[in-house]
Image 1: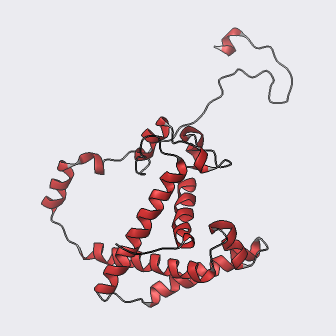
Image 2: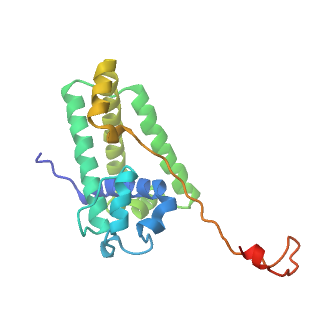
Image 3: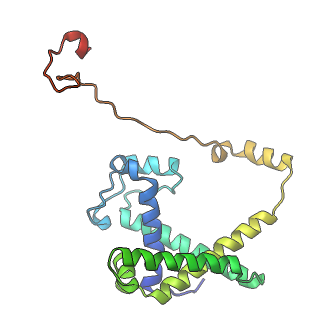
Length: 210
């Protein structure tokens, strides 16, 4: 909508989204084929990852898209969404309140504590995460906007009401949006043991192998 943003502001959303993704998908990175030790610009989203991402609650990538562009697109979507919520909050007269200020204060205190724990100043720590263009002022402004957007969205959602019939009709119209499944997998080593609990070597029989 004609808004202009600095690299630091975009990086705020890029890194926050990327870190959240890593936390959510930590157990699945090998299946997704994402190597966090290599440049995201040199890794194409695999067909396996493309099929898994929607099941994990993430948008499907474009065909042949590299991971960097995938996360950049998500970051810009978040940035524009937060900006839209902040604009709507301003238009509706939704004011900043004590609860939101408490959330901001807690976030800034956490920043100071974490930076000190690792032996950095706040500016140094922000630079490591968001790049050299990030300042505490930009970080605070974007955090404030994110908090305001979330509060406004929650307030809007809480104001909506639905009848049972409305909910049932929405469900029947698109069940796959609401039917979710959580799954886990366990990798089991099927090799027969060659030693007992005390470390003594034992003979492996055909029955044990079976």
